[in-house]
Image (cartoon, rainbow, N blue to C red):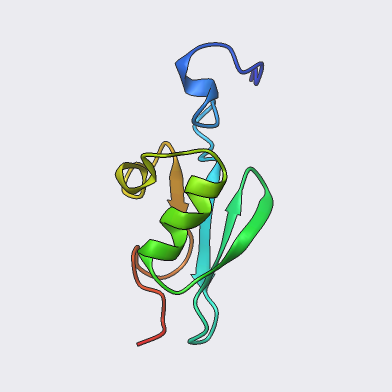
Amino acid sequence: MNGDGDGDGAEAGGEGAAPIVVHRPAGGRGRRVSIRDRVAGLAHSDADVVEFLRRAGLPDAEALLDDPRWVRWQGGRPHDYGTG
């Protein structure tokens, strides 16, 4: 495995690793979001995730939420924050 970061896949984490992780729901308190292994915050909705991604420099963040090259949803269903 070569994780040099060369080519188009590098920006999306290369080697199939999504750089954004929306972690499993936290008992009705939302979902932790990590960007490149750094905690971005606790999301209660897609709008929160989009805001974290915009702050990280991804202006078209909404288009990335359903792209597995960019976002990995861990545990639970995508877009379900366990808060409702």
